[in-house]
Length: 390
Image 1: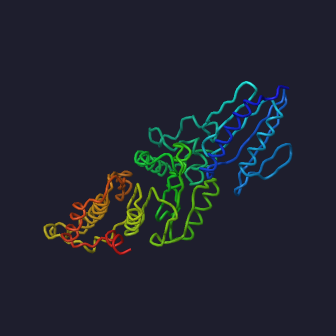
Image 2: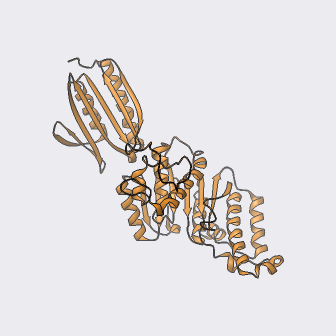
Image 3: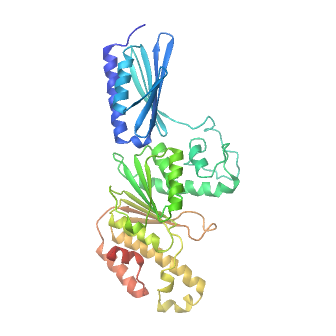
């Protein structure tokens, strides 16, 4: 047996110190480790699973609990007895593999596929002809947990439209989220999260595909949906998520919030989420509004009276005015705003997504325009009220 030389042992130790720092920076996506020692033709395997902030490590038939620092020290000590070692540090979506022997020490990152069918084309003809962001095979555990995929790995026929919607959601957010810093944890606040399906999808994509460090906070007044979201996070092993049953207006963050999202929050709940994002000076604000009721009973515009006497026109115009003034307020607060169709209007008329990226200081001229519109239309928007009287 050729014992590994001291120079390569020192190099291996440096690599493991780097992994210890990686763990410290983002332990929420760490899953565990495997170690394979080689002595001649014999192999000796160790397996460590991460549970409740400790690593349960089994080696030579004995299981003991370690901190990451103590376990890596133990592995270095054990390596001195063998001529080669293969160490795998497992994260969500990525394995870091280190191999060391008497000749060399190497480290590589390996993307993790959830099954052997990840590269096989889908046979369901109803799926869109597109390169999906949330791929079957790679994202099977996620798709099964949120009810889009069957246990045997097929997209459910009645969930194809939902699958296309969540993929479109990721597509629309990718470009704007790419503008956020990559050297720190991105904190994402979901206001009125409900069952959090799209938040789970975004978590998967940012963490396992884009390799972005992120942490998610979900708020909803319903204890039932918060409990369901917590169970889903636990089932998926998504430890970079927290959920709270509370009103948006009562939330006081203990960390800097980089992204605020609001998906189908009814009526003025969307305004509450936008106001919170503005008050927190969030780098990005994303909103997909749902029903609009507030302006319908308020706005009056004399030149349009002979048109708005028709109820359907008055309702549709109220929707446009509501989201238009929301977008204008975001611009007045220094955000670069774009409004796009999230899904086809054939599926629902409530299909707009407002995307806002903080790029500059407040714009007083746009705020004056906003105030003038309030007067002209005889409206007092909830967003304005929340920003000034919250």
